[in-house]
Image 1 (cartoon, helix red, strand yellow):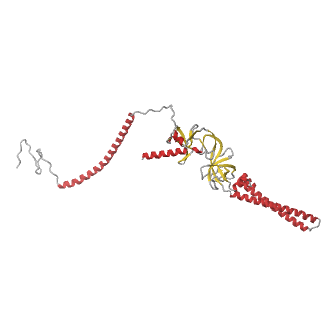
Image 2 (tube, rainbow, N blue to C red):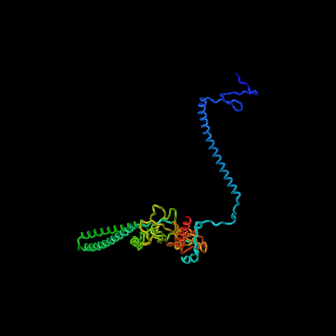
Image 3 (tube, rainbow, N blue to C red):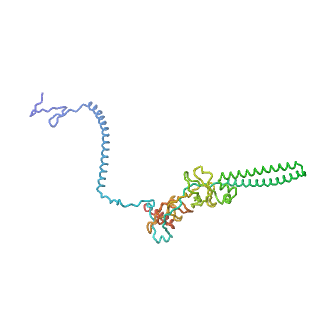
Length: 401
């Protein structure tokens, strides 16, 4: 039997006994089998969607980061533009150039402290000085010179012996010949004396040839000056043999030549800092195979610290001049493998300044190009300033700690 219609003509519908509050019938619940099939399919779709979303999210994050960076840079530019600009230096004024010395912190000493350490300064002026090339020196072993000198002396003694024998043989032959002519002796005695004379003449010729050969060998190996000294046993060669002096072969760099023959040179001894005066002897008869440059023979004092087999740096005058200031050895300090001097920058301040010591002029004095003419340098007390500078650096380091 049909249900009676409610007023208004609306009749509710029932599905599974569930009725909506708004008098409309709700949808019926799906069957269990249908739900079991639907859930895995939906999960797979959601997982795929999630993986795709991950890529999208990553791209979005990158875009946001780029946008934030651009915004920050734009903000910095705006702030920099808003800040007042410092006054620019006058373009017509020349700024002082920074040198290596300007990087060094000045050392300050009061006038009383300067007097206590005996500090002295001097104003240096540039002047023309002879330019020098840096060359390479090798102290030679002169055993060959000793051998040639002895061999020549022996050959000379043999020559003198042969000359004496020849004179005796000639006198004997003359006497025998006179006796044979007077019939006092048989002719056989004259023939014997003549044979002895000829033998002694041959011995003399051999001795003379040996002497000439040794003289020529000495000049070929050591040049005309030392070679003649070997032949004549000159005092210079005797000093070399007795080790009062050493023979130094000085070789210029390849392609370098001097306009005049160098009469002196300066060498650095490996055993000390002082320079050594070398005296010119002659051009060398051979070059150093390692360098392939022009070579000269020099002599060095036997007490200079050099020994045969040593290599040393030698400074040879080039024959030209250049402008530089003279620096005494007492003004130079060594620090961190370099040479320095102290320049006065104010009445109570001094600054360390690097110099090049490639132009020595004496034992420990140098001519320096990189110091302006008219500079005031410390000539006494530079080592004390270096000690004070080191103490200041240590104190500043402790303060930073």
